[in-house]
Image 1 (cartoon, rainbow, N blue to C red):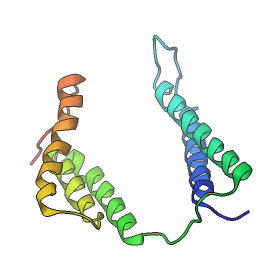
Image 2: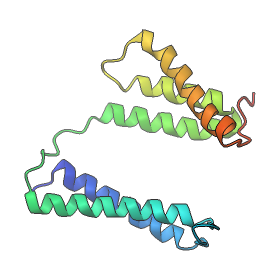
Image 3: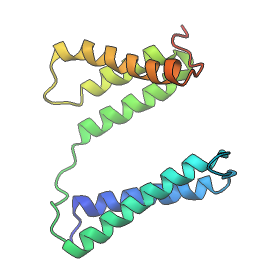
Image 4: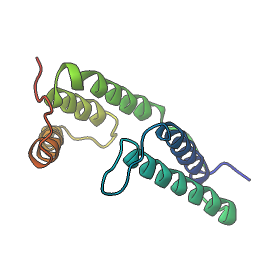
Length: 146
């Protein structure tokens, strides 16, 4: 059996889902009407695990998926750095600088990037979480901490 994209993706999803499921088992589950801290992580990690298992089984049966090929290391490192920067900035700088950093750095990972799209992507990237979390869910997320 050759290592295909779907097989590797299925194994990754299965591993992540299983690890998250193991971690989530230590949290109280609760019920549908009275959800505990482990309810959402357990459901999501079980779905991720199931999706990964389905991908692996499907690839084992068909076995004709695209080959793994070369890994685009530069975009992988750029996106990873952007996510790490977001995680470091969200508490110390607030939502607006963290999302602006995430979008601006991630933009460099796209080989077909255009400068005129960057400001629009930053504005939309900032407005969407504000509308969802601050306006819709009324969560007290710090927008600007500097």
